[in-house]
Image (tube, rainbow, N blue to C red; front, side):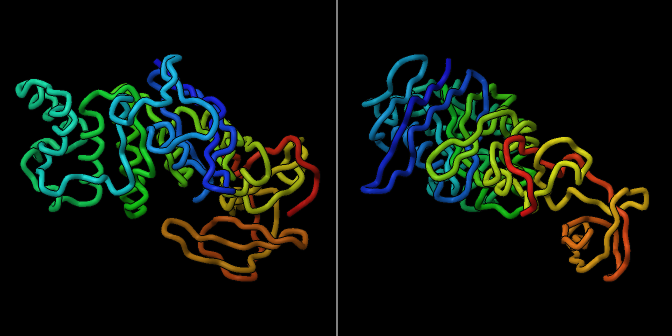
Length: 324
């Protein structure tokens, strides 16, 4: 079973929100649509769900064209940013909703609810009011509700963005585990690259209505398709590859690309320092140019040596030489 998005275009008046997008998702695969706000990723997801009408192109499941198939007949599960739980139902009542719609036998329904709540880490919460749950717990209930009818495709639209950073990071790890344990085929929309790379088997970078790059997370992180993609993925400086000992024409540096280390081959002077949650961010002058680096507490004006952290680099093979 697989999803195929073929040349989908969605317009709102003179504005093209999704521009000739094609994408395949294999059975059991989790794909993240990653891009900035307004790039068209949520519109594309809503088109797959049947909530938006495409002006051109087709959405197919196992080769069958879903044009004209109502939302409730597509067999897809939906999880949105705010969960959209039923406040008048308890946790079990929310999870049971899709099962009731499918007229699942009560005994089977109760067993399925228990299994799912255990899966999402809410065992024993069956009779809790959803209004008394934390934001993270509510999103777990929303996920359990979406998984309950065993949808052939799970669609998640910014499912963690309403949560604070620490909780979002933990739930991303939990959600990745849950999707794999459930064997779910899923399309996840997010603007957060950490979230996308944690959740997905493949990442599709979207910008201005088009998909610019698709690949495994490690590949997309290491080799962005272009400068704009590299910037979106955290590169704020571009240098010749020789600066970091690589033969490539051009390399993007993330804030973590340079680290203070007495054994380093690069040398510079500390211009600024900012304390972050778990490290110190430095601005260092090297050969008359300024670079971000991480390191221990260092005084402004100190001379430091730096090493290159490979995970902080992005290789751009087809871009011209020169800094930026």
